[in-house]
Length: 252
Image (spheres, one colour):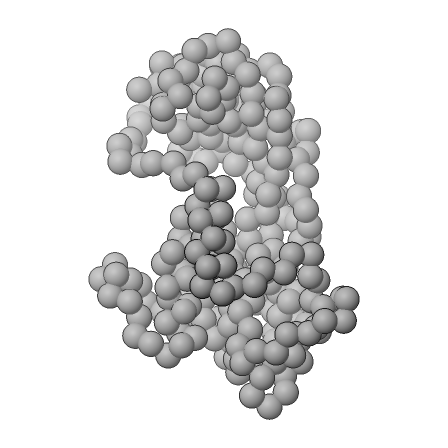
């Protein structure tokens, strides 16, 4: 399955044969098209400067002075979720953004474009075919302030070094590199549900590196909680317990 892997690099292996990749951009755009068709208005570059509770509604104000009134506010701000909560007057949960670095590297070794993603048991690196190239990551988790993350040259080099040690890919150069922030709660479990102290304020945060994979289930769970409907059977059948994700699980 992976001819480029050095035999001496693998003492034992575990294979997940039914794993599959996700077209993240395609899925995300599909969500947006569906939401817009249902009446969602997307306001990009609309920084929130205040979230004020007035009786039964919130007034959300942007830096340009425009406002939105709503009975509910969902904090799905990723790495900025704690910051948004403080703006609203809610207590932060101690979310930590962690930088993850990726790079695409050319290789002279022919790889199967449908070949597996390969990782070491300690999750110190992973790589997978990316067309004629190879996508590499040192699987880094570097604490970061909320920001538009940028890759560090040292992290890129570390990922290449670790992959070269265990493969015959002979990676030497980088076509492109980027970084993102994976945000975790203190227990590394997503936070989905009502704020225990601020009525009408809801959390959807701390998805770590699995946000796009868990998005359908997370959205269904939160939608049911906000609207007061029953948790969808597809979730309860899978053993989803809302209490496991509730913000109230953290000491206040």
